[in-house]
Length: 120
Image 1 (cartoon, rainbow, N blue to C red):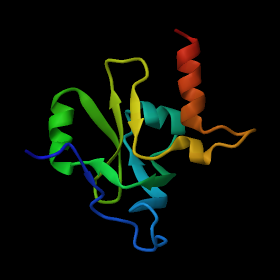
Image 2 (image 1 turned 135 degrees about the vertical axis):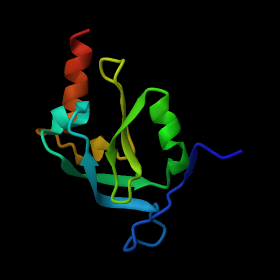
Image 3 (image 1 turned 30 degrees about the vertical axis):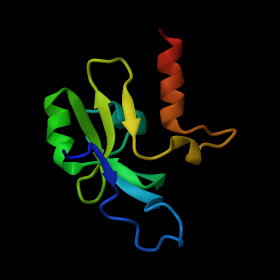
């Protein structure tokens, strides 16, 4: 049996000792026809990571065949943002948007989520 979630395959090379394998600001390519793209209004973003695990790349096509779209990928094609088109606001990220939020400038994904939730 192959696990769905695995240890990050390509850790950040200059990470501090003991830091998570995927830590720091990393680039993500965003699909143009995605919710993420409509929120960010650009095709490449940088986000703050602090994790050791990711979706096993061998499951990416299985996820997409099942209706979940991978709409943000890392430099080697790793899933970093996934969305479910059949839901008004379903998005999962491998990064933590709250790390980039500030009191007077919340992260754009958090703002978009709150707007979507308030319109239900």
